[in-house]
Amino acid sequence: MKKTIIISCLIMSTAKLFAQQYSQYNTGTLYDSFENPSQRSFIPDSSRAIASNFFFPNFSGNFYVTGNAQNALTSRLSWGYYNTGALEIGNKKYSNIRSNSSLYLGMLKIFTSLNGNQELGFSISNHTETRGYATDESIALFNGSTNFNKDVYADIFNSRFSYQVYNQFSLSYREQINPRLALGVKVSALLGMAYREVNIVQSGVVFDRPNDAATLSMRGTARASDTLSLFSLKNPGVAISIGAGVTGRQGFRFQYNLKNLGVIHWGGEAYHSDFNNPGTVIPGITTAKREDNIIDSVQSITSTNKTGKRFYSKTNALAEFSVNKTYWIDYDHKFKLSPTLIVSKELFYDGISGAAVVPFGYNSYTATLTTSYHTMGIFNFGGQFMYKTPNVEFFIGTEKLLPTARAARMAVTSPNVPQRQTTGVAHNYSGADFFIGASFKFGNVIEHAMNASFIPDGSEKGFFGRMWDKIFKGEKKDKNY
Image 1: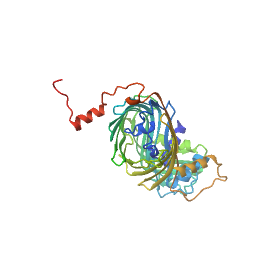
Image 2: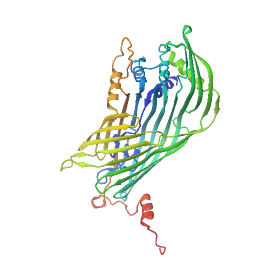
Image 3: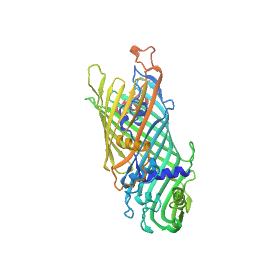
Image 4: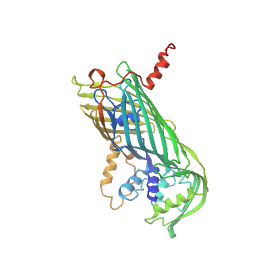
């Protein structure tokens, strides 16, 4: 548990992550159909009628480090020591925090009717969301007292962060209302696993160098719930995703998505803390156990004056719009170009992201180039490789190619000896991004009546289709029948 807390604090002190994998837009994969509910995953007269990942994990996760803390964190994670030369002590410089990851453990989707191309799906997934701000001094303290020239400092650890981990059980439904409009919805039950939020508004430290100790004081608020159970019912929640796909007359396809709008009620062992600790001694501030000692002290401070109190938290909801068009480069329809432009907005936080996705396909193989930009000044470039047939699909990629390559190179190289302390930050961000997924289709082939080996029952429209006709076409039942 202690190691988990240390890793969480390190990541939350410098990480910023966007979970959405833009490269999957308009791919028609099973993963795409669950993330974008109006997107179809079956092709009549080609696909089989049941799709599943057979518990092959479809994973999406990334993070990156911003600000002066880049060198310190990446060297600690890769080489075991803190490169603190770029950290500024006493200037209260902040690193931005934001993180997300998703892991689809199980996905199952069934093609239920040719009339409306109806699809019904079920999925089980796990999600982690992290965000906040932390000072350079908060990172430097994990390296002991080396970077602190004075013995007394005030308000250098004033930071804020939060994270939550939850499981998601989803039921999705998609229907083609007419040739130009498709609607989809995903309704989810959420089960919270862990939540922690800390807001430090006043802080101080006094270094006792002769005794290799430091006295840490903090004032602020915290709330938490650590159920740590995969299927606990103590922290229930709900979420919904809604999507609409519209095909224009010139072949442009527009998607409108409201994703993962939800709330979790934290009741299992939930508490609120108004902490105001005048001083807690951290022993061994320069020893090999300093990280454990610091974490234990911070945990002790932020957990004082606890009051059992239930609370609610929001999921990281997104509103997205995209436009796509497919171009066949040759007459035999072997080479395809299908660019997509995407705009994404987090509903509860500042900032907007824009992305351009350019997949180039040859038969069953597709190479995708992806660029994205966030209004906080972050530019990303990456790519994806995908193999996709009507019944088999596999994809792998990264949307932060250069920082991912740098992180991989650091992970496999030997640490600098002697330990180098770099004073400058070479990049505006550091980090890594990776996603992978696969799924397979089985069962009967979906066939239209003209060439079917059996005749499907297509006499009734689906639920969305019936509602659409009642609202917009004014169809009513004849009272004489």
